[in-house]
Image 1 (cartoon, rainbow, N blue to C red):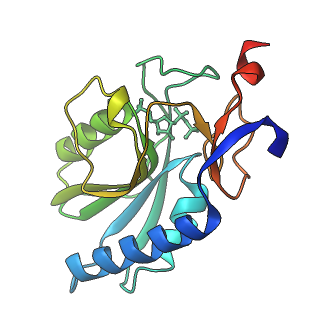
Image 2: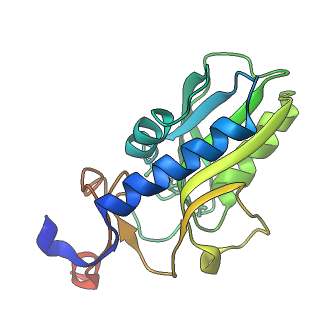
Length: 179
Ligand code: PRP
């Protein structure tokens, strides 16, 4: 699996440091509140797990399954909700946890949905931000690392459902998806 990676973009140490820094900031910003962390499956799994352990607050942890890639290397723009939330978010402070914001189609769809459902506030924390891929004007509230426009996998991010279990984020060798 590691042989399919061209280069490592965010290593394990850097990821740990990012989670620590973001957790501290979020703890500070939400002091006295009980936010709902909403992870967007499946990519959010390692980040949600590591980040949440650096948030020193009472939090709810909820998940939605949202998908737009359908196995390819670029988004279809057609965002599908495969599993909705189990609880109401009306009047709640919601912090959406993403692995990556690329075109921002996914996140804009979910933010609009949560506002429509009456959330008190909706913010976004993302491990990776890829502003070069944007088709919507959007800036996440909390960003772990800004990355260039390359197809990345690992630490939750997949290609064809593989590589999510890599402990780092890396650029996939083009031969993997060209073959
Ligand atoms: C990925 C990623 C984000 C979204 C970002 O999810 O986890 O949710 O795409 O892309 P965008 O900004 O262009 O919308 P994907 O649809 O691949 O589902 P997954 O989390 O199950 O891998």
